[in-house]
Length: 113
Image (tube, rainbow, N blue to C red):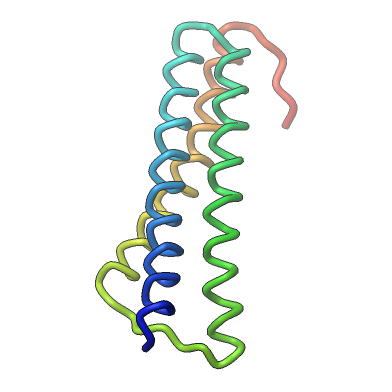
């Protein structure tokens, strides 16, 4: 693999890790805001998490497109770690949305099913 390709692959991997970590952090902040009754901030943090997940998805799509076009990247432990990171962030975001809704219900706020 050429040095330039390795660098592009590393950038995509780091994009997954950073955006996944940011999404998870925003999701956690949403839960904390809901716990204190600040549902406006909670919803904003969930949207922020969704933005980071979209950015991560774009990095991942680039990697998949390269693979489909015959530009095979070497799978390293860092690559696997990045995929684990994004999957955990997605799961945490989904759970955070449910927890925010639960706090809303406990506070008497109508929640759409």
